Image 1 (cartoon, rainbow, N blue to C red):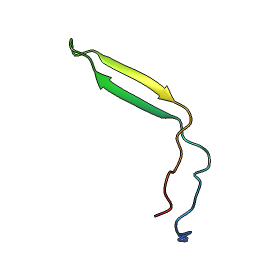
Image 2 (cartoon, rainbow, N blue to C red):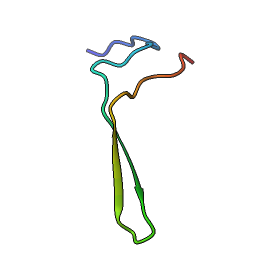
Image 3 (cartoon, rainbow, N blue to C red):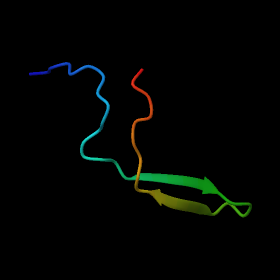
Length: 42
């Protein structure tokens, strides 16, 4: 059964975000951003 909870100000469990990019040589560079959260209610 699905239930719409609407817009919520928090996400639980809090996500661990991985931010990644490629350097000049094409190698992947990644960073763990452990404090990701929702910034806007709209």
